[in-house]
Image 1 (cartoon, rainbow, N blue to C red):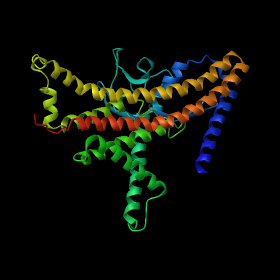
Image 2 (image 1 turned 30 degrees about the vertical axis):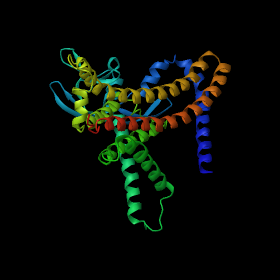
Image 3 (image 1 turned 120 degrees about the vertical axis):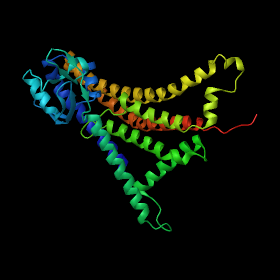
Image 4 (image 1 turned 30 degrees about the horizontal axis):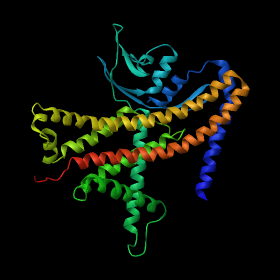
Length: 358
């Protein structure tokens, strides 16, 4: 019953969004042409502020800290609102500005007129979302740990939220990690792989929420997926056994494939292609899902530029399609976390082969 109510509420919210879009699309289309690709890329990219909404042409957003190192002026820490205020008056702030040519990244204008990219370790929207996910996961697992400590092992069986978490953890641990790595070695890799799974899963879910504190495209950011893939690559190659490296550097193939080192070169190349596949698979799937949903959102505004009749028809069509796509993205959020975890487990398992006597 609760799930039905939640589903109905979700559909109602999307329908309201569709009606709101229809009501405002005609006014917007009269003011300016809509560049869909620009809007989509803007919503998918990282930002130095967290945009909440736009009310009466006034942007309501949360400014985030800017931390940059100038070429000669050293380190600077200030609010991102300073940059926007300076830009409204056609000025730079301490020589720094947001450059459209560099995808709205911070650039520094030097006294001689040159424009360079400074050292930039600012707290961006994606960074805040990652911190939020860390807090959520910490709260979830500390609560589950507290429940297990206070329960009576003889009578209390996990149920509700704790039971769901136990089912999910045990399923990933037993059916994915243990099955792929093997009973002998899986325990030392389980903490890392479970953390990766829940980190990706929760980030994917938050990315589907169209309002604060959701909407950040964390797992659709190539830098984040690169970091996750490098983590798996290190787990594979730093802790791989001697048999693993023997199969790479001196595989059990005919001598003419080893001298010249044809097979060793291919195997060494595979060390980097495996994490590359992990990185691209997660990035491309999440990025594509968000881009498709946003594109259908802006179909409403584009069709209202043609006529009110066409806009009304496509508003209903786009709203229904967005409902379907959001439910599909809920499945994709789990599937992509599951696939990344199972592939990482398989790669780790392949780095721990048993020695076979000939």
